[in-house]
Amino acid sequence: MTTVAERRYPVSLQQEFLCIFDKGDDAGPFGPRYHHVGGWRVRGRIDDATLQAALDDVVHRHEALRTVIVRDEGDPYLRISEPVPVRLETRTLPRTPPDLRELEAERFLNEIEGGEFDVRSLPLVRAFLGRFDDDDAVLALMVHHTAVDSWSVMLMVRDLANRYAARSGYSVPDLAPPLQYREYAAIQRAETGGGARTRAAREYWRRKLDGGEIIALPTDRMRSTAPDFRTSWYRFSVPGELASTALAQASKLRGSAFMVFLAAFKVMIRDLTGKTDLVVPTFTSGRSGSRIQDTVGAFFNFLPLRTDIADCADFSDVVRKCRTTCLEAYRHELPLMQLLEEAPGLMRPAAVDGLAASVFQVVQSPFSMRSDTVGDLSYTSISRHLLSLPVGSDIPDGSLWSLQLGPNGELTGSLGYSSNLHDEAPMVAMLERYLETLRRCLT
Image (cartoon, rainbow, N blue to C red; front, side):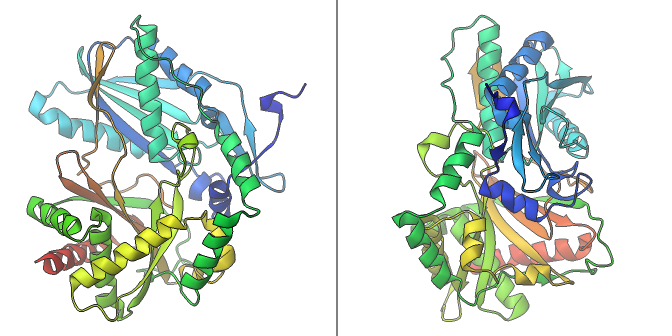
């Protein structure tokens, strides 16, 4: 009988999209820097052997962490391996005073994010434990981004906490078997053929994106003269009163914070380019339906949001139009590979030498550890990042604007950009222009 490890499984449409940008194992989405790093402060005494066993439990539970996308044998496919131990690295962090440990934890995470990860080295997760003292530590997980999204990393630490507590002798709920990512990919492939919802969604995007192209902004260097790229990350915080005003505006207009921030981004792009018919792409979780909520895998989806703001009298009008655009797009969401079949010219500007796409997103985690105690350990997600990083986790190309709402209403952000195409000073100047546009629009 053929085992799981001996079979070939189809890639998902999200993974097929990544294959479009395949630049080998040395760069791009299959390169050593296309990874996701998550961090948590952990209070309590951690036993290294129990942590190792719990990490291995997570890899056994989620096949995506031991799955390789085979790309050199014709059409890509998934190959699943048997579980192997997670590489766990422990370090001693400087014994800084408690009020300075948050900054030291950020430095620790930045050091990890600046590292590399071979996509063919299984399992696709590495763990790092940095100890301030016996009862205060930083746990970091580095996972290759072809295997997971940010939602998945939160699932992983949730399951890790459960298994660590169980192995420590605590009574915790049993984890229900998740739908495996290969099963999701097979279901997705089976559903691409039709169905009333899919046909309606295809028709919507065919009409919505007719003649539309994503916005691509000028680069400081031509892609043809600087093909070898790295991604730099500039991180920042937004003044508290600006964030609270944006949230109040969103509530007033029955929208979300993302819709307000997106509206300001579109106003800035209009001011920069003179264009009013704007297609700005964003990333969504791609997790529709309850059956995949506990599945570890790469579900994120690239969604183009087209809005014509030519007849908007004021900023409220722009927000309302963005709200309509977003709600329609969410209701008709399709994987990008299907969407491109209805709008084949959508990405054309991103392929022009001297231009690069800009993706805009607001991150609001559906769940995260916030001083959650499981067994004898307490876990707190490190969501506040303000230390910039000259070389960090890669994005496929161009720039990624990301704002994140913290648990206390604090707004922080990061601007990732391909440093072969963009210089830091112009990117920071554009960010400052965006924040000034946001301030002007809200006041």
